[in-house]
Image (cartoon, rainbow, N blue to C red; front, side, top):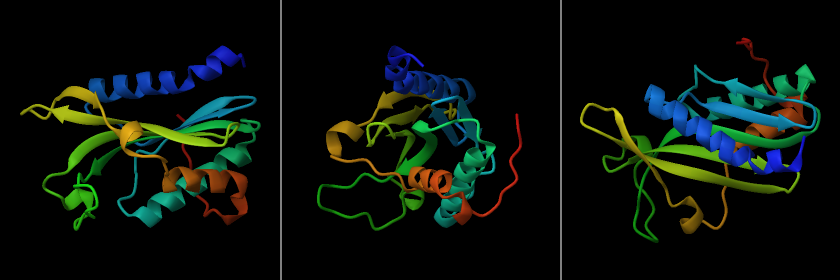
Length: 176
């Protein structure tokens, strides 16, 4: 794969994710994976509510992609998901889960792990909806300016499953 294409991966994923959420009004959690031989994605239409179950699913998805043996060496992995976010004053911890916080923000998160560079980053968009629940605007959030590092336990679970498939629970995957 040409270097110039690798540089545009983040831009391409952002473009597709924002286009999808604006068109559909939602974005199903998705993993986009770039390997040395091929690229693929996994769409998780039945995404669990519990964090532990989400991590198990991502670990199993990573293991399945490794066992399929079509990617080659991992180069980059993206995790795209809608989420709730609590906004707190500096130095104040939230006392509610974001999903229960009446002042929560709805966001689109794109986590990115560049395996070749050993770098994790991401992009966040505030989802602004109108009275009819239609998306009116996607506003770039403050991820880069507010945080010095980005971590995604779900992305890490995927990578763990890919690297150590023997530790993942088996799942049934549908091909689309």
